[in-house]
Image (cartoon, rainbow, N blue to C red):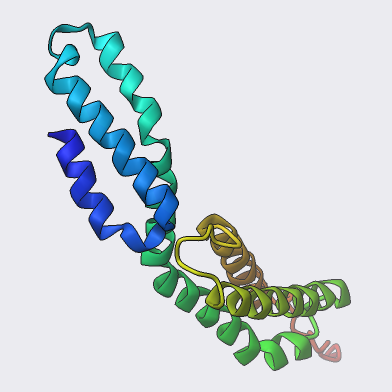
Length: 173
């Protein structure tokens, strides 16, 4: 049953594998299915586990599917994080309690992340869905989180407290 499920899943995932990989994987699945209904009926669990080696191509196909399935949401998240950073850039750069080093770090991070994202997004859009992505969703999330964390750290940095000036009253005789 697992093999039949895998075949059905493979049909859904067909665009994430080139023709050769798809044909090889289907042949491997058919081999395993034939084995299961013949010699595999009365073997040990260890023998069944050996069929795992045929799942390798399926994992690669599934990995591409998962990337493309999550990519629109994840790309919107990094777009939102960059837009939020740009929206608050003038405020962050004008705050006196934010050090020059922190401002420099902010500008460099936003610039480098924006450049990376624009190049990566364009290159990925030109890539066929059956090719491995140029970056992982974890990389995308790390870039988003770095922007998010720095912007929120700087926006939430407390201003130094200013002690009110005490006017001394002249002594009364």
